[in-house]
Image (cartoon, rainbow, N blue to C red; front, side, top):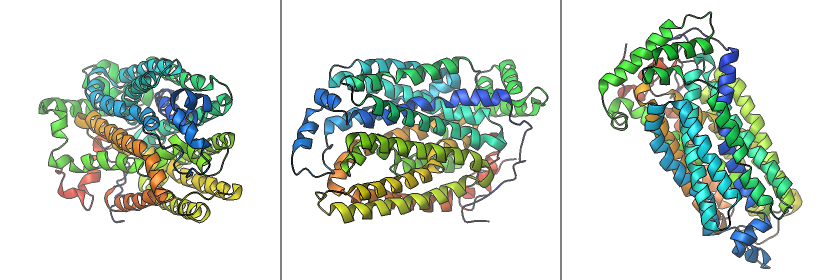
Length: 501
C-alpha cells in the first residue's frame, strides 16, 4: 500500500447500473454549467488588451504602453483593472456560501437555473457598460451566477453518475470550462479589431448562460436531492431513468432514504457538524484542494494569458492566438483525464500532473530570467517567446488532466449526504477567495517578482504534490454512501473518523 494511498474494491456498498443514454444526456447538460465560468475566465483577459476597451475605461495603461522604457512585466499593473477582473470572485464567494442552504432547500437543478439567469443579467449589463461602475456591477452579478452553478453542478454530477464512472462524468464540468475558455479566446480574436468588439465579447456571455439555463430546465433533479426534500416517488423515477429500467434500484434508493433520515434525525446545523472531529479529513480536503488548485497558477495565467504573452514578446493578435492554443491544449488534456481517471485513479493523475507543472514553471522562470534579464527591460526574441508558449502548453496539459477536473471531483464525492452541500459550499468559497487574492495581486506580483512569479507557483506545486502523496486517499469506484471506508483505512485519517458498519 502506497504512503497515503488506499484503494477500496469498487464493490464495497456498490449498486448496479451502467452508462445509459439518459445519464449521459443528463450529465452533459448539467456539465454545461461550466461554460459560463470558462467563458468569463477567457473573455476577461482578452478584452483587457483591446485598445478601445482600455481607452474607454483604463487609459492609464495605454499611457504606460507608450513609454519608451517600460518594464515589460509592469505595463498592466493597474488596481482598477484588477478590480474589474477580481470583483467577480468576491461575489462568487458570497454566493457559494448562500448557495449551500439554497441547494439543500431548492435542489441542485433549480440553483443551476438561478445561477444561469443571474449570469445572463450580468452579461447584459457588461455588454452595455458606459463606466467602470457598470462594469464592476455586471461582474458582481456574473460572480453570483458562477457561485451558484459552481456550487450545484459538481454535486449534481457526482450524485447522478454511476459510481464506477463518476470521475469521467464529473470531469465534464471542467471540460465545459475549457470549452468556454477556448470559445471566449476565439471571440476575442475575432472582435479585437472592432471599435465595439469588447461589447460583443462581454455581451455574448449571455449565450452560454442561456444554453445552460434552458438545458437545466429540461433535466430532473438528483435522486439524493429529491429524497433529501421528501420526494421519494420522484427520486425513484429519477433513479430508474438514469440507472436503466432493467436495473433494480430499490437497494440504492433505500440507502439514500437511510442517509437522509440519519441527517434529519441529527437536527444539527451542517456548518457546525462539518467541524466535528470525525469530519476533519473531509474539511481539510474541502479547504486544501481548491486552495492548492488556484496556487498552481492556472486561472491567473488563463485570465491574463493574452496580457502575459504580449508582455513577453507577442503582438496583440499573436497574444490572442497563443491564448487560444493554450486553451485548446488544456481542453485536449481534460479529455485524457476523462478516459483515465476511473482507470488509473485520482492519485496517479494528481502526482503526474504536479511533477509536470512544477518542471514547466521552473523552466519558464529560467527562460524569462535568461532573456529579459533581472530588470525585465531587455527585449525577448520571437524564438524565446515561442519556447515560453510551448512550456506553458505542457504546463496547461498537466493541469488539464490533474488539478483541473480533480479539484471539482474530489470535494463533490467525499462528503456524506447531511453535509454534502455544505462541504461543496466551503470548497467553492475557498476557490473564489483564493482566486480573488491571486487575481488582485498577480499583475503587481508579476511587476515586482518578474520571472520569480513563476518560481512562486512552482514552490506551491511542490507543496501540493507532497500533500497528495501523503494525505489524499484513492476514491475511484467507491459509492458515495460507502466513502467512509476510505477514511477508516487511511494511515493518517483513521484516527479521526468513527468506525461505521
